[in-house]
Length: 437
Image (tube, rainbow, N blue to C red; front, side, top):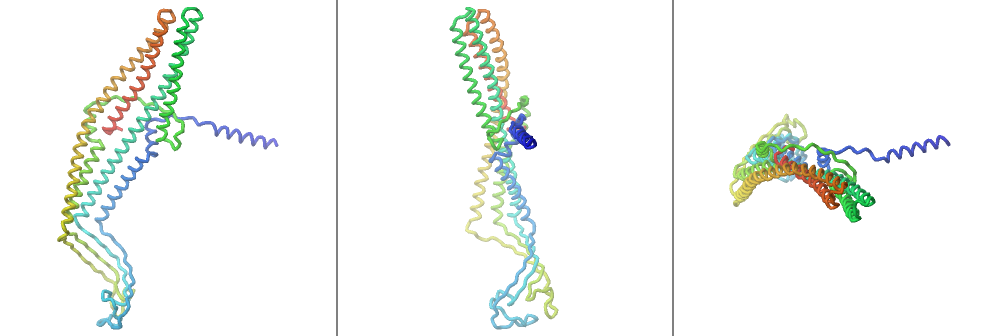
């Protein structure tokens, strides 16, 4: 009985330990991006397209090489009653189908085929260009995913900090309510001060409730990309704020590493090779074939009367196109139209890149300067709130001045968090444009 009780107690203790939540390790931005790459379907589709394009390139290269097959065939044809004359085959009945060589025919041959033409060579180059397009599109998808995760990550981080601001403001409002009540009890302040402080405290409590709701929403939006269950709780680790790079470095990196520009250039190359492939239909293709084995009336290396069945044959075929009712000409024209459109897309991408460089750099520079100003505003508002409260305690300030100082500090802290998110996102957009991340 005692052993049973001890066993039951051990099981209950183990169950209780298992039900305790595991300590949460803060998730960094890089870890969040890595998790999102495993769960986001659009990025997975881009990865699949890039892998398929790489295999297409390998398939196109393989098409330039000779293919080898081992051909085996047994053919029976109904005899027509006559005999084939001449040589060792004279003893065989003649087949009814004149295309066949004998009533019984056995073939066992290794066959090597090769086709040479401009179309096959162009197909390899086109597959390589298509692979480059898919690689650039994968990079575009990766950077889009990074942008999305970064935005959600910093918004969730800012929501957490706004909760801290709301808690501080609610605590400050509660403390000020107690101060006004003490001054009213000491007959140093009117009851109107208590009422005003209580109204301020009620508003701060409501603000705290809204901040908690906002942070819950922000974490859920982020968790959809990170976890199988979006209700999984997690804490976020803030990373150091990076400095704004020099403009010359930004311009050089953007022209060299921008995936949209690479994608447009690769697409133009694909369209140009499509024109070449369409024009290749004007040229002949050379087909080469070599076979080694047997093709005889006996399934044997040597036949009757010393006949040797084992041997080889080779053939070369040159097909020269003559007339196809202008189909090739129309295909060439179609590919030229698409090439011109790709060239226009490339120039538009270049212009858009120049505009985005100016826009993103100006946004990041302005956000950085404003963030410094917002930090100063928080310090100034904090000093003002402390001094105003001291003056109120000494009877030299009104309750409205204290409430106004509290509101100014809270607004400055919230604006600082919004400014931090703005600068981080602007810097992220600039880094994505230049390939820094």
